[in-house]
Amino acid sequence: RYCDLYCRTPECISILEPATASPLGRWLDLLRQRCEWRLKKYVGPENSDLALAVLLGERERLQEITSDAFLKTGTVHLLVVSGLHVGILAFVIWVVVSSGFISRRWGILLTALLVVIYAAIAGGRPPVIRATVLILLGLISLLFARRATIVNLLAVAALVVLIYSPGELFRSGTQLSFLCVAVLAGFGRLVENQKARRQKIQGQQAQHQLKRLIQENAAWYRKMLRWIGYKAGQLTLASFCVWVLAAPLVAYHFHIATPLGIAITPIIWPLVAGALIAGFFICAVGWLVPPLGNLLGGICSWCLGTTEWIVQRAVEFDWGCLYCAGPPLWWLWGFYAGLALFALVPRFRIPWPWQISLAALWIACGFVAGGLKNNDSRLTCTFLAIGHGTCVVLELPGNQTILYDAGSLGSPQSASRTIAGYLWSRGITHIDAIVLSHADIDHYNAVPGLIDRFRVGRVYVSPQMFANQADSRQLTAPEFLRDSLEQAAVPIYEVWLGDKLSVAHTDVDIDLLHPPQMGVGGSDNANSILLRVQFDGRTILLPGDLESPGLEEVIASSPQDVDILLAPHHGSIFSDPLNFSAWCTPSWTVVSGRHNDQDFELTEDSYQDVGSQILHTANCGAIQFVLTEKTVKQCRFRH
Image (cartoon, rainbow, N blue to C red; front, side):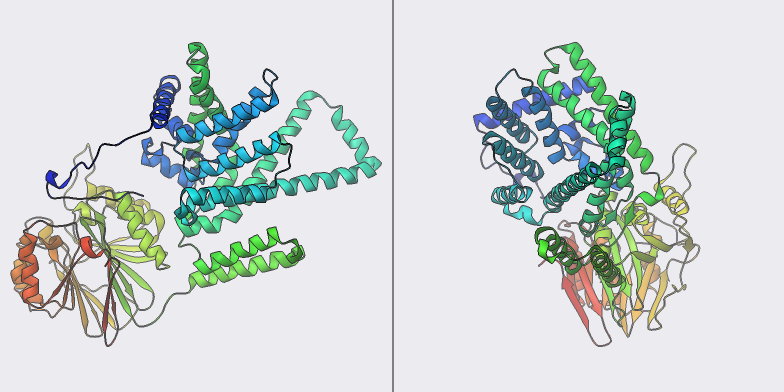
C-alpha cells in the first residue's frame, strides 16, 4: 500500500545512505530491463503496457480505466503475475526440455532454474512465491519419482510464504491465491474420479462400448471439436466453482461481486495463455532472430488487444458487476471452516441434500445479518479524512444516511474509495441524500464514483451550483457532475435559505441557514450551503467553504449555540474565524483538510478562545461523534 508524506521545506529530507544492491540483484534488474525493452520493441506501443503488466506484473503502467475494467469483469487476476503465469512458463519449458535433446534430470534442473529466475524478475510477490514453491516441489517429486499430494504442497508453500513475510497471512491476495489453487485441485480430483467412474460403467455395458468405438473412429475434425467442447465445458465449470467459493472472500475485501467473470474467463484465458507464451519466447529468443521476434510480438499484441476489447465490451453489461458491503467476519470464518472440514475430513461429510441445505441456510444467515441495521435512537456524524476536501456522513435514526459533500483536491477515485470503504464498513449500501455545498471540485468530485457503487436517493444543491455554463467545446466540472447524475437517474433538487430536508425521524431537524435563493454575489464559496442538523437539543453546523460576503450575512443573523462545527473553508483565515467562532460558540470544531501552515494558528486560537476543542482530520484521521439524548461521544480513528 502507498501513503502520502508531506513536509514544509526540502531541508526536511536528508539522505541517510545510498542504496546498495548485490551483484545478483543488479544482474536481475538488468535482465528485467532487457525484458521490458524487448517487449516494448516487439509488442508495439498499443499493447506494450498491458504486456508488461501481464508478463512482469507492472500494473502501475496501465491506465486506471483499464484496471477498473478488468476489476469489474472479475478478470483482474490476469494482470497479476501469479500461479497461472508461472505454471504456463514451467509447462512451456518442460515441453521444450522434454523433447529429448537433454536428459530428464537436467531438464528438471533447467526448468527449476528458469522458473526461479522468472519469479525473481517478476518481483517475488507472494502469489509468485507460492506458485514457484509448488512447481519446485512438483519437480522434486518427479526427480525422485515420489508422489506429491496437493495438501502437502500447499502446506509447504504456505510455510515458505509466511517465513518470507508473516504479514502475508492477512493479505487478501495471498488468501485468494491459496484458496483458488485449493479449489482447482479439488475440482481436478473430482473430474478424475468422475472420469474413472464413467469409464468403469462404460466398460461393463456393451452399449457404451459401441458408442466409444464410434467416437474413436470419427473424423479428426469431429474429434477436435468434441475435445474443444469438452475442455471449454471443464474450464467454464472450474471458473464457476472458483467464483462461487471465492466470492465471499472477494466481497469481504473488495466489496464487489463479478458474476460476468464466469462467462468471459474461459474465453479470454486461451488468449492470455497465448500472449504469455509469445511474450516468454520474445524475452528468451526473439531478440536472436528479429523476424521471429516480430512474429511473436504480433501474436502477443493481437492476443492482448483482443483480450482488452472483450473486457471493455463486457464491462458495459450492467449485471456484470455488483457492489456490496460484504459478509461479516464471523460468517466468513464459519463458511470457510465448514468448507475446510468438508474437504479435509471425509468422515464428517454428510449426504449431498444435507450439504446443500446447510450451505443455503448459512448463506441465508449471511443475508439476514447483512440486512440488519442498528435502529436505535442515536445520530452518528463522521468527518472522513480525505486530504484537502470534505465528506461528512450523517447516520440518522431510522436508518437514513445523508452525505454532506463528497470530494477531495486529490484523486477522485481515491476519495470515492475512501468514502465507499467507510460506508461499507458500516453496512450501508444506500445513500438517501447527498448535499453538495458549492461548486468547488474538492467538495463533489467523488460523487460520480459513489453513484457507481451505491444507490443514491437524491442530491441537494444550491441555485448557484450550476450557474456557470460551459462553452461549446468543453464541459465544466459541475456540468460533468450533472451529466453523471442524470445518466444515473439521480434526481437533483435546489434548496436555499429556510428549506428543510425530508427525514424519517421526528426528532431530527435539518434546515438551511444559507444561501438565499438569489445568492449573495461573490465567489462560489460565499454561496456555500450552511446546513444545520438538530437532534434532541444538540446542533451540528456544516458551512462548506463559507466566506465573505456570505459570511457577514450569516453572522448578522441570530447567534447559534453549536455543539459540533465543521470549520469553514478547511480552517482558512479567510473564513473570519474570530467573528464566526463568537457567533456560533462551538464545543467541538473539526477541520477537514491537510496540514495547514502557520496561519492556522490564528484559526486555532480563535476557536479555543470560545472554549472549543479543535480536531483536525490530518492529525486524528476520521472523527466520529455519536449523539444521544444525554451525551455526545467523540472518537478518533487515529490517536
